[in-house]
Length: 114
Length: 165
Image 1 (cartoon, each protein chain N blue to C red):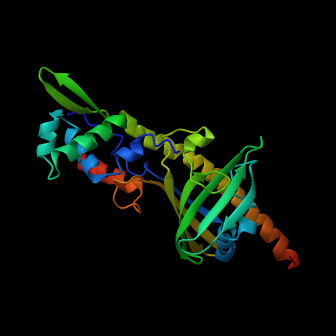
Image 2: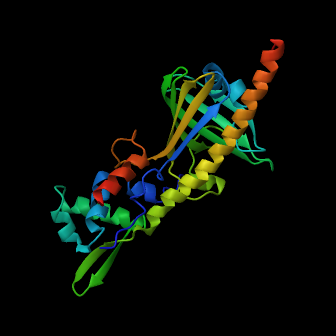
Image 3: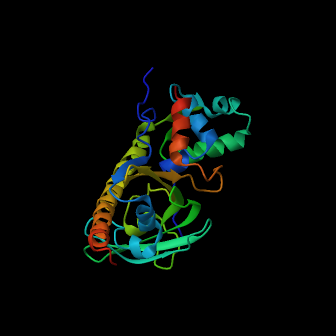
C-alpha cells in the first residue's frame, strides 16, 4: 500500500484550502469564523482544516473556551527546496544530452556515415 | 502585518530551465522521444539508463530506469499528455517500481514531500542552426479532493500567493 502521507503539495492543491491559508495569513480565527467565509458546509471547512493540520500548515490552539486556527507558513519553503533538488538533476541530465548531441554530430557530419 | 515572503516569490515554485543545444531540432526531439537515443543521456552524471520503453502517443505510457554509479536503480513512469512533433512534449512523471507501478519517493529513500505525480513540459524552438529547449517541471496536486489534476502545484502556489496579497 502507498503511504499517502499528507504534504505541503497536498495542502495547496485545493482552492478552498488555499483560501483558508490566505484568510488566516494575517489573523487567527475560530473554526466557526473561518466557516462563515465560505459557501461550503461547516463540516467541509473542518475537513480542510484537518488536512491543513496534517500537512503541518495550520495549528488549532485553545484560548479560553474558543479554539483558534493559526497558519504556520514555514513549511511552504519545502516547495522551494524540492525545486532546487530537482533542478540540479535536470541540469546534469542536460549536460549529458549536450555531450551526446555533439558526439552524435561529430560522428555524422564529417564522414557522413552512421 | 508580518507577511511571509515564501509564497510571494514567483518563479521559485517550479523548475524552469532553458538550454541552447548546438544541434538541429529534429535531433534534440529524437533524443527525447527515441528510446535508443534517450538511454544514452538520461540520468545525472555517471548514471546509466539500462531500460527505456515509450508508447509515444497521447495517453501512452513510458517506463525507464536510471542506474546510479553504485548500481541502485531508480525507475520512472508516466503518461504522455501532449505530443506536437519537434515542438512540444508534455508528460507526467512519477517514481515507479520495475514493473511500472507508481510508488512514493519514500520508496527510494527520498523525502515524502515529493508529490506523487509531476508534470514535465518540454518545448523545442529553432535558434539559427541551434535549438532552444525549455523545460518546465511542476508537481501535480494528487488526491480525490483536488480539482483540475492537469494543474501544476506552481499554479496552485501562484494563486495562493495572489490570495495573500
